[in-house]
Length: 263
Ligand SMILES: Nc1ncnc2c1ncn2[C@@H]1O[C@H](COP(=O)(O)OP(=O)(O)OP(=O)(O)O)[C@@H](O)[C@H]1O
Ligand SMILES: [Mg+2]
Image (spheres, rainbow, N blue to C red):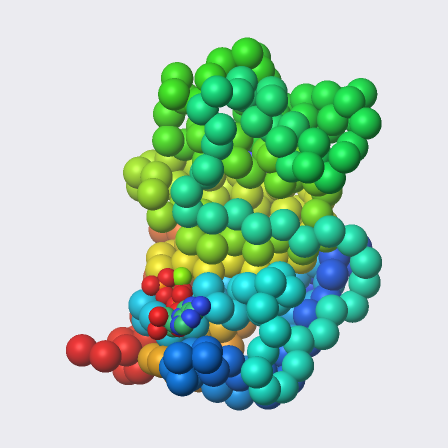
């Protein structure tokens, strides 16, 4: 990976203008139970941008992603998208089918979308190569490590060539070393493919390393209390995480979070 120093020119603009843009205007969500999960969310995500969302547990982060995915409609305000293309969701649990090989798992979403078999095979092969699983096509999920399972889960959505990727704590279940490596891979994948990414994470370091902006949410009902700009250029060297500038920024995000979270 190229080494980037902090005094390199800051490139905070999206690497490729081919993702889907998102505009949330005064969006709120009150569930039929009466629970107010989100309140007055105003946020815009530019096409191709990588934005992270952090906030206390239960503040409505997953609800916000579901709104952006179009799975639920906000009960107040609006969520609009600009640009065409597919949106894809990645969850904490890879949800692989144990009776299917790596190759067949990688093809699963394309099968559901009725892609032609030749197209499925080609796209799955490309995606497996991208996540470092080439050579494991005939293996079954039980024989993969946790990190490899998450890579397969990523390959499955990358194969769809989504223009918007919604990630809900995708790396929360893997060990720290694997998580660092997967973060680097995810960042490179995003830079190569140019989709818009919205990442929910409890890990402030992950939020800062991957994104160009971190949305910090309040306790429930979730509001955006601060948007922190991350001024480091892409591609970001892994070592950036040990610089004082990085520590300063993660400290700032953590302090905002601590100030807002329940004790
Ligand atoms: N379908 C639903 N019906 C009623 N309440 C819901 C529904 N989905 C979520 N909630 C509630 O909305 C609030 C926000 O939930 P959400 O899952 O969005 O939080 P979160 O920020 O993702 O939390 P965590 O960090 O623990 O994953 C919670 O109080 C939850 O119980
Ligand atoms: Mg959640």
